[in-house]
Image 1: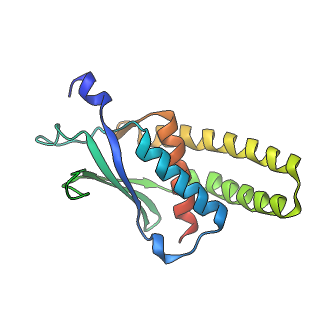
Image 2: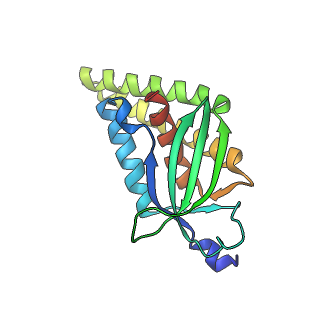
Length: 171
């Protein structure tokens, strides 16, 4: 695939598998909705595992799920007519390296909810700064773990990390 074609590769659809299993807190639901909306507007996502005949695929549907303690990226070539497409690959990542960050993320979400309930504006701002730092750390880990499998940019990695945290709360 040439560089111009590679630059056009993106996610057109993101689905969290098992979404209906558990209700999320309003803040986690807002994080999920914002991450999905941002991803569908702007992202860089290029599987490096394309097989012969799949090189023409530029838009992908990503089904993200947790299965047997692993994070699964079920990648499909996106067909605008049907909203789905042919399977491209499934990439599995161990959740272990993410667990500490996911736990910290949940603690920050819980702290944010409490600070909002108490009306503590300075505390809310401090928590938001911590969340940004945590998202940056999660994005770097996501890029590192997907190296050689999926090419993504930093903002896409931040949003995927958010979705992994939200998905983890559903199980």
